[in-house]
Each structure stands twice: as C-alpha cells, then as structure tokens.
Length: 96
Image 1 (cartoon, rainbow, N blue to C red):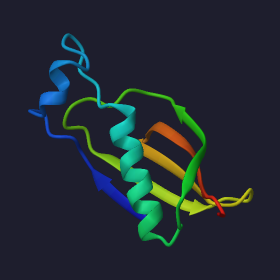
Image 2: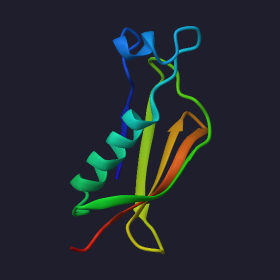
Image 3: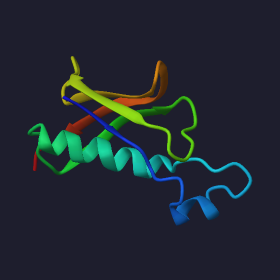
Image 4: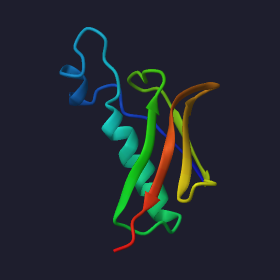
C-alpha cells in the first residue's frame, strides 16, 4: 500500500515548529502511518516498534508512504520525499 500527502504551507503549526526553519512534526507523519496501517488491516492496539527520522520535511513537500509486511511481524514503513528517505520503521499490532 502507498499514499502521498503534504502538510499545507500555511498550516498554523509551522509558526511554532519552528518559526525560522519550519518542519513538519514527526507525530503528524506517524499519524499517516497509523491510518494507513489500520486501513491495511492491522488491528489495534498497536505500537511503533521502531522509528527513524532521517531527514526533515518542509512545508508543502509531498511525502510518499509505502507499507510492506515486515519479517519481524507487523508492517514496515518508509516515508520519502522524492528519492530522499525521510523516515522509516515498523508498526505492529498488540494482542490483548
């Protein structure tokens, strides 16, 4: 599964994150991972087993999310802006 999205340039979050060099909050990116994982059938409760933020995302930059089954269970994810990987990790459902 894949999806592409961007936080609008005029979003008020950029006023405080960060005023002189605005970047998209990591939590906003991870919300998209959770939504896509849920749409793919991963049932909650869930946890982010690993997350690596590798490069900042600026206002209006399109990010493509790709999900794939992970060998360790759950779903692996990669977030990219063009050829640049901005984050990666693994999300898994918890039994209980």
